[in-house]
Length: 252
Image 1 (cartoon, rainbow, N blue to C red):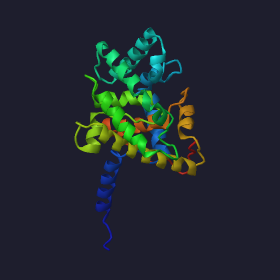
Image 2 (spheres, rainbow, N blue to C red; image 1 turned 90 degrees about the vertical axis):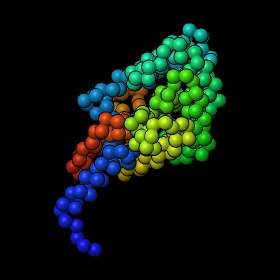
Image 3 (spheres, helix red, strand yellow; image 1 turned 120 degrees about the vertical axis):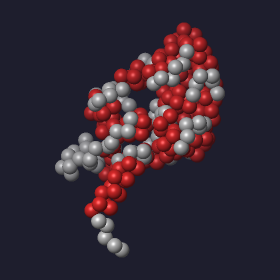
Image 4 (cartoon, rainbow, N blue to C red; image 1 turned 30 degrees about the vertical axis):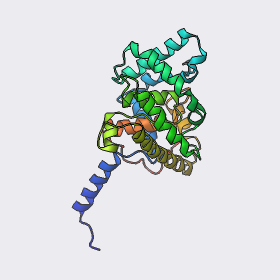
């Protein structure tokens, strides 16, 4: 086989870097970088997430057990989060969204108790993903971005959110539904397993907990959230994961 010229190697390196920018993370260092950048770097977008991640936020799946005023407050909080990301949901959507959230509560056992990095994820979870996504997407004004973000709040240990840029990167179009979201989540699941394996090689048994401590986040964010950060930064914002750290740099 002919040896590559330096120019050919450079072109291959550039193409590889471009491909990597639109792929999910596979290494612990990637999500650690994204978490830091997302939290205190040039963006600081975690301020939008903290309100809905605090322990006092009433879990939407149990809103039907709350007083009506509590349910309204929780949905209003959720809507404010969604509108930070330009979902443009009016307050008139609150009741419709709340009703659907209660309706899809039947999937709670399979989804709420599943983490994206769980050793075993039953195939039925991806079928449930398709169903709950399509049901949320059927609510007027709830587009595919909002549907994924609602699920990311309902089940923060499992779902990775997306937006138009991410959908187009994975499916070459933005008009997608629950089937495509389930496929996307299977890819994110593969990403999570790769990250866990890589972290374990560096003696890190809890990647999300370790990163959360490093950025001072309590309660800790989930690995699904940190994967979300990486995909959003590299695909939507087109930021580049920097050069790998020197061998002597410690991960933990």
